[in-house]
Amino acid sequence: QVQLVESGGGLVQPGGSLVLSCTASGSIFRIVAMGWYRQAPGKQRELVADVNAGGGTTYADSVKGRFTISRVNAMNTVNLRMNSLEPEDTDVYYCKGRIYSSPTRWDDFWGPGTQVTVSS
Image 1 (cartoon, rainbow, N blue to C red):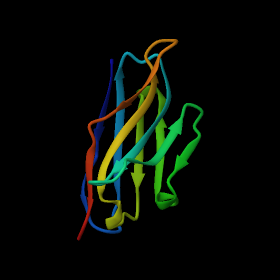
Image 2: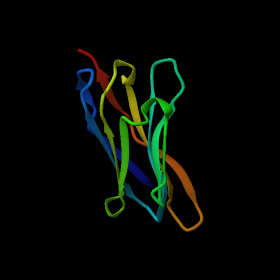
Image 3: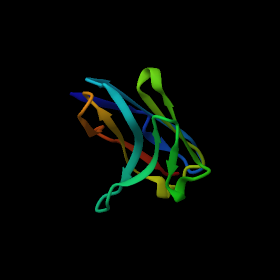
Image 4: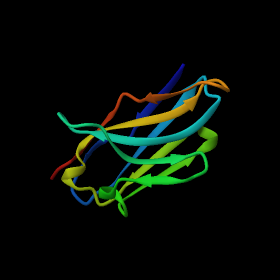
């Protein structure tokens, strides 16, 4: 089994910064990609940013230029640096990993979520 552990959420004022971190552990054969999603009550979960094994990144249009995702391969960790935070960024943020637990089987694994609140 694979587990994802998130950290770094909290309360920040508009214009402030936070760093979210997610580490995968357990039966990991190979990580295809890791990323962050967010979800507001009553809405669908949406992609914020992800990074694949080759280092390629994808960002939601709403966070381009403000958020930066990076991966520490040796530690199976992905970080999301969030700058210039806006009240609209308030959500529960979830880490997702597309991970092979054997040479032939992959699954999408999710962390439990961490709350980010942007408010004065």
